[in-house]
Image (tube, rainbow, N blue to C red; front, side, top):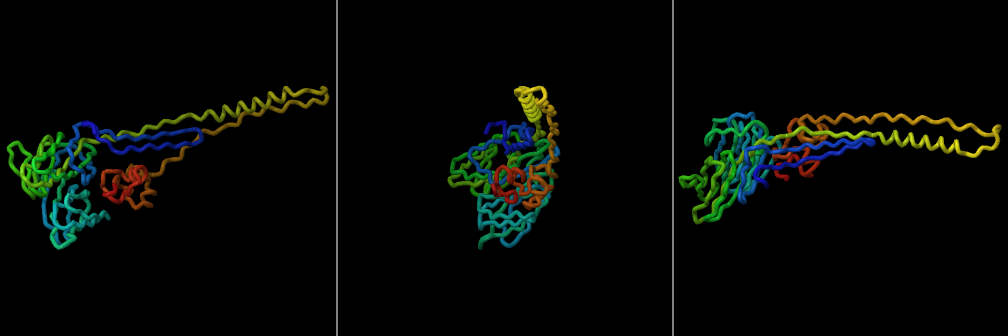
Length: 335
């Protein structure tokens, strides 16, 4: 991926009525700042943030979950599995997941999650969020990503002894060490299992120990600019032209027929005026309250929320998943 471009799915819809064609092509273009780059970390969860341009701040809390525990937050969060038994997540919005170590799920601020361990041992979990400054678990200094939509991702990597993970971006990133120990600051201080830190976007995370280390990294991407769809309509004059030519041909054939006598020669047939073709009309598009590419009626049939752009919070709109990608807009793990 180029350093200054992040790509999302684009939709192209072509509608033909008679000989009139309308082409609607929405595009998504990423703007500065430079998106982060990672050597080989894997994106394990992602969501979409709508920010007003003010300060935001990372937050984090860690806990061991055995019996059913309800997790809730006033900010968008990731729930990450750090070890122990697999973690069962049952969301109030119908999004459920089973997380093994190294996996995570994105949760909107309005959703609650009933969490429990699927095994004898507790599940080690971390709740990692980003939102308004202050509040429980706030970590690091506030920063300003910019007003608009932002892709927020949680990445996971297992670093072998001596291996490094290079972070290349402009905004501070959240570091959670799930296992082992790593260094990420210029002073060389080590962050051990369970530690949470906020490091610069150009930090290098290094495993300086002789055992593997497991880390999660939270990233806020650059502003995503959604451009207005453009429409091009072609005229449909060909139908009228064809009718006029046909009428002229019929009249010419009648006047060149051989005559017998003036008394018995039939008068030529009257020239027929070309039929009038009404201008093509375009039906009003179906109502799409959240502009996600899926009409309200289709959302009701699918089970998605007609007032939410991305019902399952996986970063892809309901219309993209249902109409373009062929994935389930109710399942954050598909794709």
